[in-house]
Length: 398
Image (cartoon, rainbow, N blue to C red; front, side, top):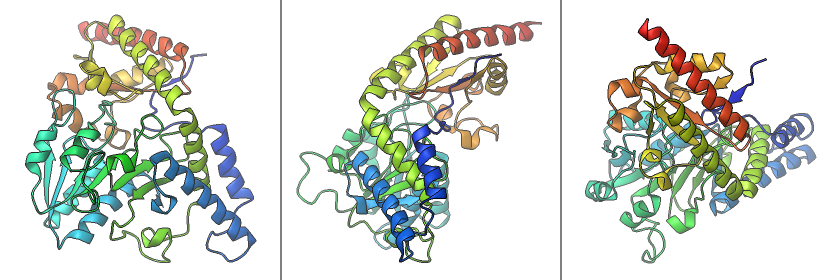
């Protein structure tokens, strides 16, 4: 039987047993509506409260600043569209980057259709923005800046402390900084549980999170909304989530999210160090097995600016989707890039923004790790990559 090695954790993760138990308990035992005025309702409300506290603790925020959503995509849309609509009388300029997640880029496109001006900052060959470019793009009518923490395709970590300085936020900022415009949104879906993000220290206004990237359930996420920030809700109705996200709360998903966050927070430092070691073992092993392969993103030139769990590798001369299937036949699960767009067979906007040539873009795979992976997984993946690449190149030469 072929050993199964799952290395597509940036797309989604396997739920941990503690999370599954929390979800099942909420479905079978604490099944009341959190808004109901009876015991079962109160118990469900308590579950939501405890999860909200866990998410807030992970960000250094207050529980009342956490709004539960259906996932990272909804959180990004609520942050961008909700903020832009609430502030449209004060300005119509939005700044983001060319390498954001599609849920940010599509939301920005919608805003452009509505008459907003969106500035897309370029990145260098490693995927890093220039704080100087951001400073140059800021104008008096800029109402929102949206910068991801970790890129979901290549793992580059954006320089958030430098962004904070450009925006007049963070340590040393003048009194009152962080309470005006532009608002600052961070997509932290890929960094939660791996890297620290202290919203108070940085002076961030909005942060998007997702449960299923940290071994929680799909269909649940959150948006941190700093006290005082006004958003126009996307969903209206019963006034749940402080009036920002109407609809009966997904109590099982939220309970699972809370369990996943508590585990991730307790293990973060140890897990990050272990993931980085596995990442380096994987990257070095692939480069030895396939000398023609090339790393993408910060890992290629500034490993200190690379997330601990993502390895993006270009195999010029091969098609990424063909290599994905060749690896699957050998028990290894990887991807060509973002799961939300992988099946559309469109060239990666992230890799193109890095300036990769078409052959490298077409031949890139993303391997993403989780704390559940082992050195044996990594070694098996390296061996499978070597075999698959050799077999496919043999077919090409025929």
